[in-house]
Amino acid sequence: MNSGNNVKILVDTHAHLHMNQFDTDRDDVLKRASTLELVINVSTSLSDIDDTIKIANLCGNTFAAIGIHPHDSKDVGNDYLDIIQKKIDIQKRGKRIIAIGEIGLDYFRNMSPIDTQKKVFAEQLMLAQENDLPVILHIRDAYEDAYDILKTVGIPEKRGIVHSFSSDENWAKKFVKLGFKLGIGGPITYPKNDLLRSVVKIVGVENIVTETDCPYLPPQQYRGKRNEPIYVSYVVDTLNVIFECDISTIVFENALQLFGLTKIGGAGLR
Image (tube, rainbow, N blue to C red; front, top):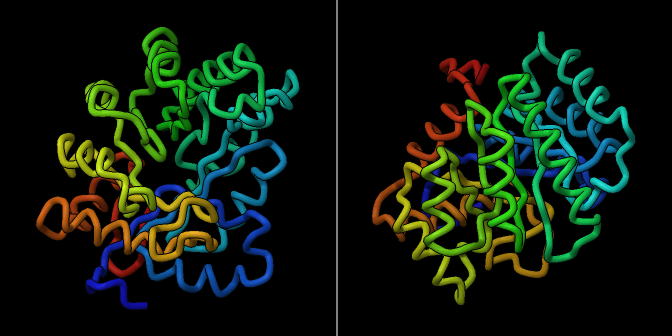
C-alpha cells in the first residue's frame, strides 16, 4: 500500500483486532499489521479480554491493554477487578499485558450511569497504580470530570494515553502537564478538523502517539469503511505535514517509553 510516503516505522497504540468486524479476514489484517513496529490491542469489557490477549499472544509486535470501557461499566459485577487482576497475573511471565484500558468517562452517549462510570474509572485507576501499568483513557464530553478524578484518585506513575483526543488546546495542555500522551488517529486527516491539527502542532510531537481505533475512525481516505492498523500510515503522513518532518521515529520512541518496552534489533520488542 502506498500512502504517499515511504513510512517504515508505524505504531498503532489503539486497535480492536478481536472485534467481529475482522472475523471474515482477520488473518489477512494481522498479516498487514505485522509490518508495523508496534500494535496495542485494547479490550472494552470482561467478555472480550481473553480474545484481546489471544491476539497479542499470536503476534510478536502486538501487546494487550485490558479494562472496562465506560459504556460497559454498568455490566460489571463485584468481582470484576479480581478477574482483571488474575488475567494480569497469568500473563506476567509473557509480559503481554502492558496497560489498563480502555477506561474513562463517556457523557456523549451515557450508555452507563455517570456515577457508575466514575466509580469503575476510579477503581481501575487504582488497579493500574497497584500493577505499575499505564492507562489508556477514553474521554468524551467528560474532560473536566475525568481530570478531577485523576487528580483525586491519583495518576499511575507510568501515566498513559488520552485516546482519540478531541478537545481544545486548554485540555490538551492540562493532560500533557499531567504527563499523558495524546492519542492521534484518523480524525487528524479529516478536512474540517483544523482544531485538532492546531492542537497537535501546539503540544508538539513529543507529546503524541499514533493510533487507529480500528475498526472505527478510519482516515479520510477510507471514510465509511472499516479501519485497520496499516491505515495509521495516513495519520503519520498528515503529522509529517503538520510538523514538516518525519515524525515516525519520535512517535515510536514515545510509545516504547510509555509502555516500558525495549527494541531488540530484528527480534522485536520486549
